[in-house]
Length: 312
Image 1 (cartoon, rainbow, N blue to C red):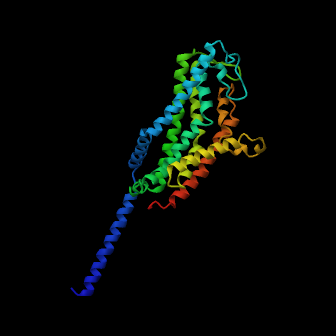
Image 2 (cartoon, helix red, strand yellow):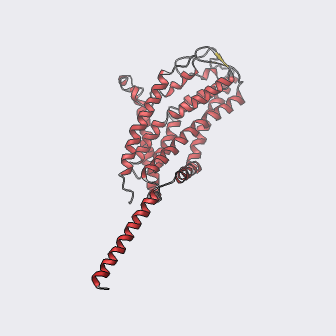
Image 3 (cartoon, helix red, strand yellow):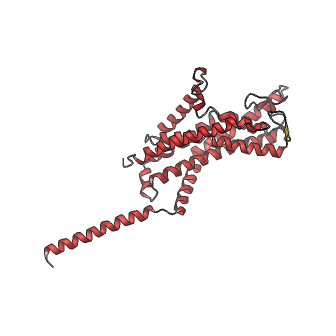
């Protein structure tokens, strides 16, 4: 064999090797649904096993306990929470707790939604990508046949799972404390009608689901912020800071024209589920605003993350 033929044959072998590597890489990218489920399962286990996550859930569970004990002490000392008819003008359910412990669920959700629940979501979402980058594990996650889009969707799904779990933790804690400290039974809606305890329990579950859905905008915002930095602490602080700022702006009368577009503006509309018939207008607006924020900031997070340099 001549030298030219040997060089030509070597080039062919090298080219075949490169083609084989490209083919293997493409095959590796064809991820099965089972592998995707495994990635989501791993993310869920990692998130819910962290001490930080458990601490956040413990704080959320403690809020209904403190509210219930405070109301019990107040009424036990001869005070009154106004246990007359139902109060309108928003989720003022605290006056009904002594009559029916189920109202502690509504009160606890109303107390945690403006700050505690969004803060917890901001911590989890803000750390989703930035925390991995800071720990140096992000590039290793992308070495696996996950892909950036699939990984981002998995992180968002994990954050949404935390939204649901956190809301249910508040609701279950409130229901337990309410059953232990106060009587249970038929309850009076904001409209003054009576419904059975079973129907009230169903509405409490529906309210918890609506509250969880009300946090998808915060989750998308936090995920977007998380793609902008490699510092998990900075991402969490920025997300929580934006959350506080938006809620302050939502209370300024001069900004009433733009306040309906803030993700927190219709948060307390879940109280309309305790009317008879249910008022759906603000509830639909709330879910629509959350979907809009999820679409906008989710798309921004995807655009940023797919162009992000993770080699550093």
